[in-house]
Image (tube, rainbow, N blue to C red; front, side, top):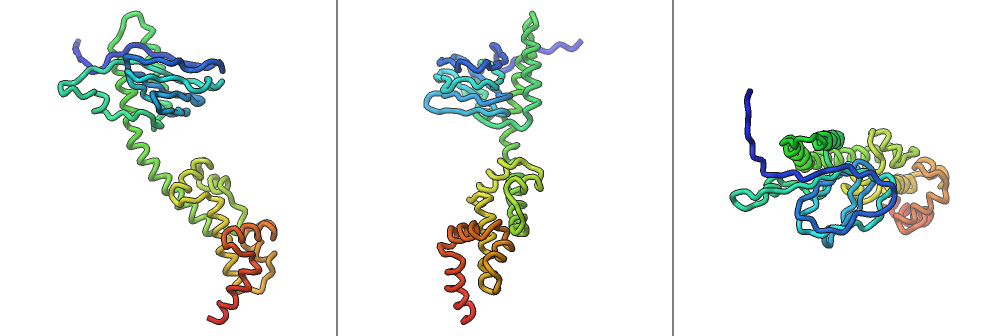
Amino acid sequence: MLELSIALPIKVQNGGLFISRGVGRHPARKLQSWEVIFVEKGTLTIQEEDRVFSVNAGESLLLWPQRRHVGVADFPADLKFYWLHFEVQETNNTAPWLASLSVPQHTRVSDPQYIISLFRQFLSEQEKIARSAALEFILLLILQQITRTEIGEKEADDRGISLAWKAQQLIRTQFHLRISTATLARELHCNADYLGRVYRRVFHLTITEAIHRQRVRAAEKFLLSDARSLKEIAALCGFSNVGYFRQIFHKHTGLTPGVWKRRYCKEHINS
């Protein structure tokens, strides 16, 4: 039998699972230990010193020792989160071990289901009469998974940028159809809210604004070169009716389609 004695730089105190009943809020307190929280369902709103965190499902939060934290909102009825208190031993250079591990204070984890399984394993191990070093190892695995979110967020950011550009290409080629954030998200096999966020971050405007801008640009070309009616142009550019077409066109150009045509069509012909 191989027997090993390993001294880890952490010491687990205790952990648990909180399931809300829709009443109460997180107590105000200042702990001597670290606390890591992972939200499985709902949103936990908590303040540490002067900073407020809204921790959503799939996100972790690290509360620091000697800092006062307090709940700033009642627990929502669907809230469910795991928590774990632990101490950190100082290293030889007096720098906290957690800092060298670079655990982010608040982040979205890359593999929520794996962290949930680790917390469940921790709670199962904690119930045993004989205290086991496995608790410290499980905590290390949890913290390691949280640190990996920095790489995961970079990969997610790259995927988000790629999705935004794919949406932009669809807008350029399908603006005349009945498209929206929801239809683009279905075509790109992603969440509509997520697509809207990454598109706005990349292009600094909403998808709806981008669709309108593309339609107005197409309308300007039709107004310059065609003798079609406004109703025909509106339909060709994806607008459901002339009134809405006029409204959006004026919003983007400052002119009605008729005024725009009279002003710029003559310049186009004489040029």
